[in-house]
Amino acid sequence: MMASLPVKSKNPPGARAAPDFSELDVWRPFGPGWRKLHGSFRHTGYSVEWHDFTTATPLDWSPTFHPASLEICLNLSGNADVRAAGETLQLAPLTAGFYAQKDPSLTASRRGGERHQFITIELSLPFLAHHLVATEGGLQPRVSGFLARRNRAPGIVSEPVRLSNDQQQLALSFQSPPVFLAAQRLWYQAKILEVVSAFLYQPSAGEELFCQRQHHLNRERAQKVLAILKENLAEPPGLEELGRRVGCSRFYLSRIFTQEIGKTISVALRDLRMERAASLLREGRLNVTQAALEVGYSSLSHFSTAFHDVIGCCPGLYPLMPGAKKP
Image: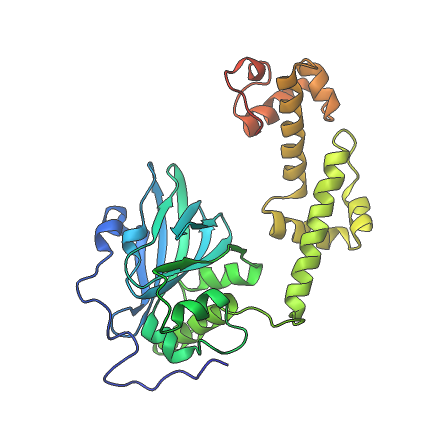
């Protein structure tokens, strides 16, 4: 189990951080789009930072990764990746992951033309060594291996995991802690350890939390709804019928589907219809009117609007576009 918070001392867990490292050069062009919310990597061994910016071109953000650190990213919007030793952590909207390095070895980029919103929790290796036991059961193998003294791996990345609704709310709360100013130090420390326990540990054999079982069930329900819609594009079942087929109420289904898929059922149906219509048009089997009817649209104007919104061009022009690809 994780140890309790340390008593303040003259030598805090992060005291050995390189004194000449700075990530300001990367974030300075974004002005208030980057904010340190709490902590000091050099003095306390951890730092919580908020990012909210748009970049026209891809951004190399690996120079912001501290040497001798592990960083957890709670990615709310924007796409990014972090690479280490032939492995890649791909961060999509509403996902999270961690990455670590002893010496600068990670490479990373954030996609251009997108708005990026994310929280980073930067943890020094002395801070982690103070709170974690590399050999204790349940710690992620990549983390325990990386913390082992004899391990010489320069860097590691995790698999991405989808942020639960509670974790999304936690990420947002980092900007405005729901406690008095004097209590914020304790609040941030507690929440940092909560994030560590959520993302750096894994269940033991046969162990699964109730919330994890519920998440798996909700994921299965959402995927089953997608399969049902895909098979019935022209005449999809109503929300009541969908709920009956997957074993829950229509109100609950509507909520969990949006949480798991990232879009409402109606938007997902529209996107599936447009993907199918684009495939039919590309194959040249049907004209625009026939493709619209095939996927359940009786109004050609409504079909054309939806097609343009999803695919990015008018349906009549789509087959003529060079190199038209499946969306």
